[in-house]
Image (tube, rainbow, N blue to C red; front, side, top):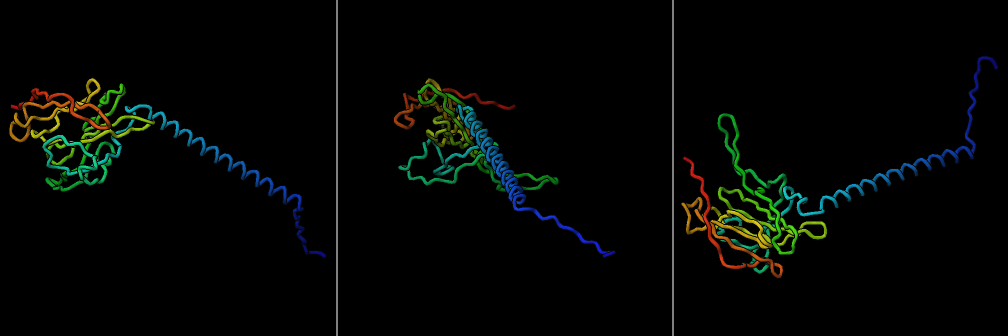
Length: 239
């Protein structure tokens, strides 16, 4: 028949169709196996990194860390240990430090086209390491300052066990001349606080002397060890 073109179709045989499906299945299985191995390798890598990061208390990132909090935030005139249910203090929202701060803007004003803001909350003041339990290994002493215009601090002591930090105790101190924190450190296996001496206050802002108290770790808590000691605080006078 002239002028008429007949297209011929080549159909797959059953064997060819099965072979194609089998190849596709093998490709999927190889891809699935590759993904599983990749995920496993990533998990191992992350896990090994965490293990490495948790080998000592010095490698804990206390700038990005959650800290417990309880009791009133202000009005302290002495060192007060916290976290004991017998005190009747309710737990507060934990402090969540990000890059050393947990702050909230409470007010702001604009002057000369520039906005100035005031923040309230907690900021990391110091992290020091020393043996404060007498067990011969380093612990962490963390001081968080509560920004309200005073010098109120909350102080935490962490040990290191089972590859992670473990909270031993935490406390509030007073503010400024009224038992404000002058210094906290570890010495000879004990925890030492030096607080401003109210009897030697120079106005409300500061004191010319401190009261030193040593604490020994006994039966799961820090207990006063020895008599109080007294010393001078150097005060900078700006002329």
